[in-house]
Length: 550
Image 1 (cartoon, rainbow, N blue to C red):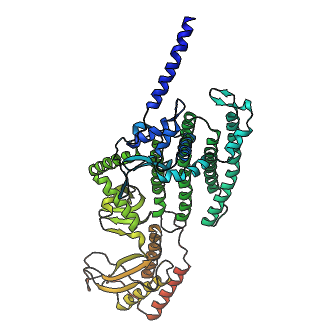
Image 2: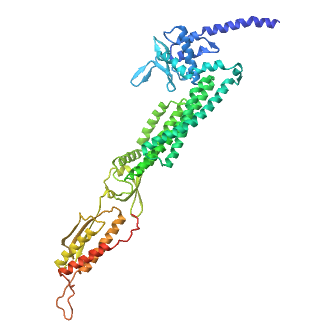
């Protein structure tokens, strides 16, 4: 009995002391940290003093200010935004830089809720006038009109709790997930049809099965993103506690970011597939080589920015991280100047396009066919099938003779006739070669030269200068073969002989020996008939099929 009396005697004194202790807590508005702490601390269940919390709003009557501060806290709790006081500045003169201007203000959640912030007025920090003006609209957005209606229709047993969660909240969560799945399937079909229309508008084609597969894979994460947005919009209406909301929205934001990364990666695939189809229709193959390079570049950009976005959810300051990466990147660039020069050389090659894939080029001592153009170097295959790997920085600076851009293949040679060939046969031979070139299907009949150009050491020089239409090396050799055979047949038919480096001693009168000089038939009728026969044979001659590779 004595113990009970002591309890009743001490308990009122203890409760009175606790109330005096709570009442002794003062409102502190000296800096951003103190103002936000004052607001949230005086709205806790164990220290609920809304009048003191309302002091954080400037120039508003007490009842309205109380409603405003309560709504601010409910919005923060509903969005699962946990305030980390260790990161809030305690400097009374703190300034926030925006562009070239500075303001005495602090935004608590600049990425997720930039409308709510505190600012300095009359040497104290209060919630800004923008926050006060917009908080009702923000609250109605987080907690729509049906929230109060749900609270009214929930029966008494709906408020029974399991592990701190009421029954109506569990039922509401299950319904939310169900409608989220339904919303997903509906949006998926609509997204695919929408993407299909865009693809048809760009490519003017409806029969690309491979592209349809990409569009289906792209529609999948897009519909999931819409479902996540639907769930994140409705979930605060269930009014879970701050702890649950915090972890739920953290997981939801991570999932949403991962899906966004997936969407952009698939979008890169779709764009690169369309660009690949476009480059396949162009004459140049250098832009074909650009497809994998751009694909790797855009994929890297998506992954880097996605990773930085994920880091922000764990409190990492990406601005500081990027600044450090920039400094480290500058140091790395200075240490690897050759790589940077090669990258610049690669850009210059794709901009200037001095050659295309499969072009035959002469670049300094290197002669061969361009096979690939990479980030750092270009691979050229020589005629003996060996490989040259040329740094792009060097290739962009040296003189390049691009044989692949020739309009025609030029062929120039000299035919040497014996010195004792009569002038009539020389003229007939030259005219015959001209006629062969005109009749040749692979030579330009409007641009050629066949002339008696001079006197060599052991032959009369006939210059033959022609242009072959085909740029392929193998077809050029086939065309040369037909031309050479026709010229030899012409010479044989006319009785014209080709000279070779030699010294000829002619003995006009030697006992019992005949003259070794050839006998030439210079009759005009014979010459004309011979040339006509050779041309007729040349026209009717079908060239052999060329099976060699260039």
